[in-house]
Image 1 (tube, one colour):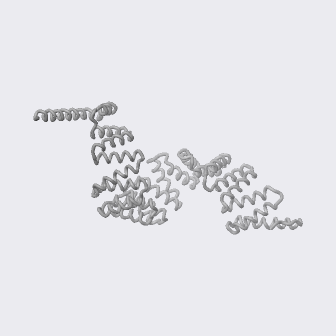
Image 2: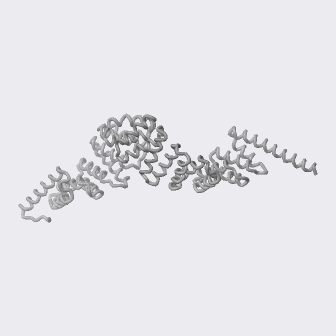
Image 3: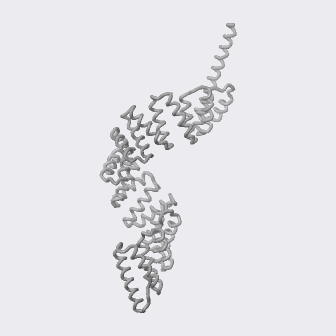
Length: 418
């Protein structure tokens, strides 16, 4: 009997030793990037185990094959529970967009280890990633109770409140983050942006300056500064900031669009054109880029180019396009095509019935085009009813023409429809 036990034990020792030797060889292959051969040897092992499946999963993970990573981690966990393998499986599920499975693993692990703040923090961020904001808020509040000094918890709570559109609690959380860590640039950036949106100028500048003192090249804080300066029409001061951003991140949509707008307002139309053309190359769906190119064409008296860009903007745009139709009409007018101009001034007014300039041009061109002034009279009267005294120059002209047309028809003994 003793001999039999000894033989069995000897067999087990030899088998384990052989497997250990095999795994060492496989690890060596994997370490040297010979993944295909390592996988071949792992799959050739007859008695599959937790370790053989786990090592197979790790190799697949290293070559970004997350489907097989998850497959072999699932097989490994069938042999035994393992925290490290479970976390890897959760991450693989994330890569495969299987958010519910990933969250379920974190929740299960946290239920068994409720004092593990790292696990709780990771689960909170996962909730945020998949817009489970209420659950995230609950977790981050709990984390803050457990460790009130950790700035990251307050920051993540602020993000969770942002997703629920709870502006005041969001700002308060970011302020608490800043108080805990005055170098927490992400919270400073969020505060600068929040106060910019609230049009609280002093607070905006406070956090812009604090942020740039810590991180002078921080892109988002510099963007807030650009937008604040633009709101204040400090166009010359904006240029060096944008050029710095351009050197940090070339061919960026925001930088090129804002440089285009700034140069346009500074009447540097050549540089504005270059920047808007860059913006159009980056994103051809932003119709306002082509609107500006149309404006530049008008300023440079290249009316056919202006017409082309306005037409492109009007075609791409889905929002109100009265500015584009108005520009297109103006280009046609400059090209001595008044009927086409009238058509697009009418479209501009149809698009936005508050556009008094478009309505005025409809009346004026109708007046210029047709000898019979009844249509013009009707348009002038309509303008007067809608926009009387809104624009002094236009209103005076309209009143003058109404009086002249009425007098002319009275002298001829003809009636006008009032």
